[in-house]
Length: 121
Image (cartoon, rainbow, N blue to C red; front, side, top):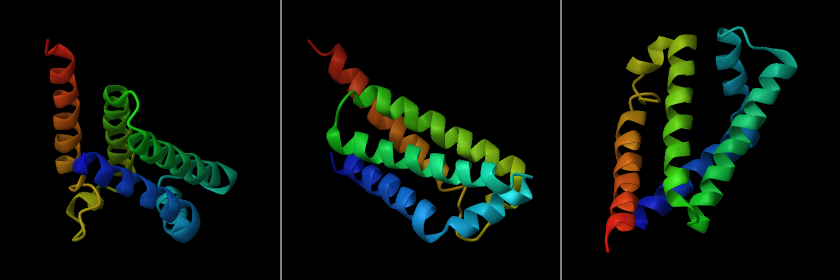
């Protein structure tokens, strides 16, 4: 429960931050990948909305196995895109990409626990 709620906070804070407080940073990163203008704004907004939906979904606790799978897909997608745009994020001192590894492990663990719950008699 605590792990799920902490993930929810992470996703919600990331959504709010991406859309309202650090949009320029996101736009700068996307520009490095050749994404500018309205498409870049769409990417920031849609990414923020996806993050927010995942955060709320976790809070609601509905269909968690599916939610965990969606999280894995979203994090892997974000990681691949950022790796293509700027691989130096892997060696950044604040670890914007390396932090994804323990997150993926934790989400997979939560998914596994949900799977075990459905198998129990």
